[in-house]
Image (tube, rainbow, N blue to C red; front, side, top):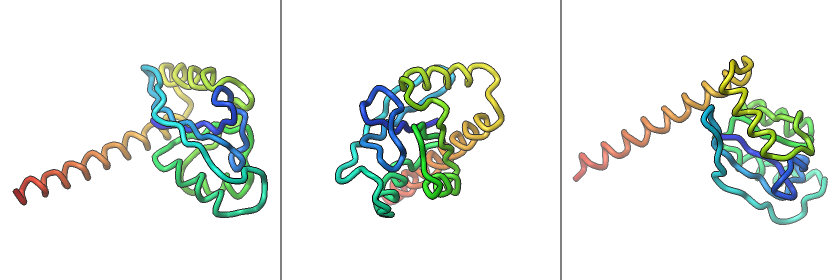
Amino acid sequence: MRVAVATQDLTRIDAHFGWAKHMMFFDISAEGYHLVRTHRFRGPLQADGDPAKLAAKIRTLRGCSLVFVQDIGLEASARLNSLHIQAVRSYANRPISEALEDLVSRLRQRPPRWLRREEQRSRQSQTRLSLRAFSVLSGSLQML
């Protein structure tokens, strides 16, 4: 499952979603987690009502199930919900590693229903991507 973290300092969950300087992306499972990439946002990061800024942040979350944030506005939260991305505020201002280790621990035990649903959705998405890649590859091989 892929999760994102809104951060200013790259060590804590210390950024409001719309004002985040960085978004860090992790793949996470019951076995552990690893950093996939870090995206740095350029330009003004303060609240200014610019919908393009919000759209750019949401685009970076493609494929994510969760995003850890210090806080998030109503519009961003609604848009993420429509994409089945859950915003998590309960780790605000805490170390990123603490949130990720807690999530790994929950995955090892009996995760809450919302987390099981997100994990299942993530697996289904990966299966669809694999099948799509296989069909593209098969078509390419037949053309040879």
